[in-house]
Length: 157
Image 1: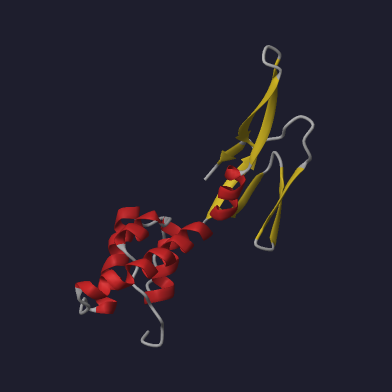
Image 2: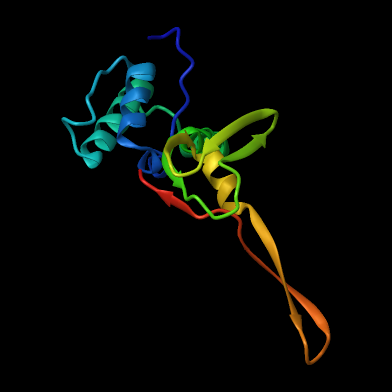
């Protein structure tokens, strides 16, 4: 275990992880196997934090924790963004059968009306997609625009 490069993860970051992700991290970092179906999320968090405390033997002082907080939160946020989300993009009249999306050179093709599992950051990008709608006001003769969500997305897990 001493060969591994392990960084501390803050309690708040562990709380944001899914049960499956906590179990994967415990196995990867501390060689502890746990089945997410055998434990509640609170129990898994406690197991993880205990294993982390034993690994680091709590010999670091508060200043070290403050220096590493940014790195720890960034790593936890990255893990959170990589977690899978199962969604369904509804079929809309006169819309293409697929939603095509590209982020940082990686492309996804999501079929409308079907359950798909994608990373959380892809889901967030879909949620942030907007469409401009224009209305003509006959009294003033002006066109006004409003942004509305581009896709109707149902989160299944």
